[in-house]
Length: 117
Image (cartoon, rainbow, N blue to C red; front, side, top):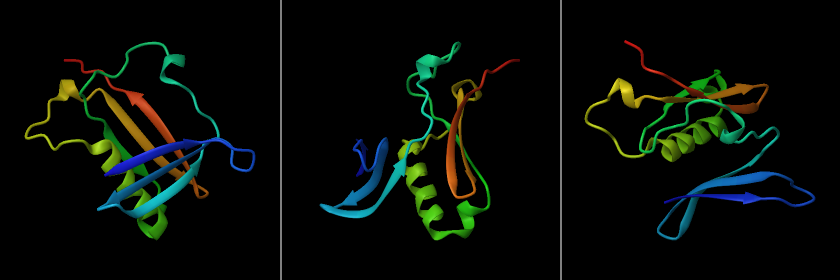
């Protein structure tokens, strides 16, 4: 199973812990610091539909070179994947999540996609 915990203390402000466990044992766990968080309500326009799956994009060669980033890549995919569909509808593809690594710092950005004929 997957878990995520939000933490805040003097020594480690604005952190989240993402992890995976199996049979009451922790398989892997990563602590991430949050620098610039913006809520979805702070943006105008179309919001994500319930039940839609995001398209995940991983930018940067560190996702493949560094073992820590490989493990984190796998953890992000497990968190956002959901169930595997038999077919993909272009209308259901309404959001994209882009994970970028720049100077060993991860940025996560969400984009809205609209389907036009």
